[in-house]
Image (cartoon, helix red, strand yellow):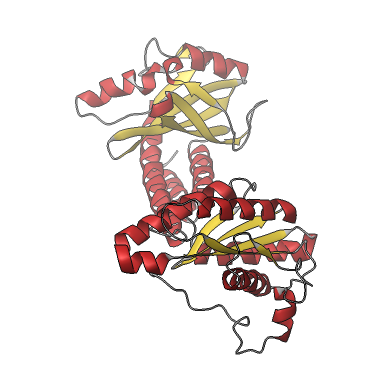
Length: 382
């Protein structure tokens, strides 16, 4: 392969990873780009999970053999089956050298390969109809992160030393791409996370709720929202200080997360100040009400604070058509306001009351009324 062609392959690999949205796309772009650059038929990207002592496959691309999934859930191999990951690489790096790639074939180790540590890979190559592979360590921050693996089928030209050297270059490009993807993932996580409690924030709820309501309108999926107001936060802040108030917010956040776990896939969030919510997509409304009831019970048992005012609105209840996320939010908020006004120790559910039900009150509310808009958050800002 000419220098210009290889340079173009490196650029294409880097561009593919840079354009990826999320880690999975970055992994796929890395494996696919390396496979094309090296003229392989199959490629895999794996991460070394030190704490579990295993090499876990993140993605398989190209001509996959039986049992090889694109994004496998449980394909992992004990590191002791591949001692080169720890021993061979460590020996190579100990003297300050670079983590070079190596070639293995279905007939045994190729020149420059790790002697004595290849029998599992040789068997795997033969079992999957592959004639050779090149293995390139991926290094982040001076430590082995994982490996890039590219293979060719039986009968195709066997990888050589020049291919291994090129794979080393590709692995360095992949490492840079992975580092960038991880930084972007962290930035996205922080953008949708409440710093104090570690729960989702209002931005995350708005995005998820918009998607959920679209699914409801399209497929009829049940969407439920629990909005709750933590009672007594201002008193705690005024009498015991904001540090203690923060501790109350953190403890309630843990309770909210615990109760949210009763609802598969529910999103637990702090909206701001003393306001929190649970967003459930799919579970029956009765399950959501039970989770809200448990939330009220547990909040009442907290050492700090004065319990929680909790309102629930679900598309499965008689609340009228829900054509926007804003309407469901307003209904849940109105139910929560009623729970607070009545000092209720159990959730108020929109559509399940009488003449005082939030659905009725919302229908009569003027644009300037309390129920027509979200109120200003009280307490400390998120």
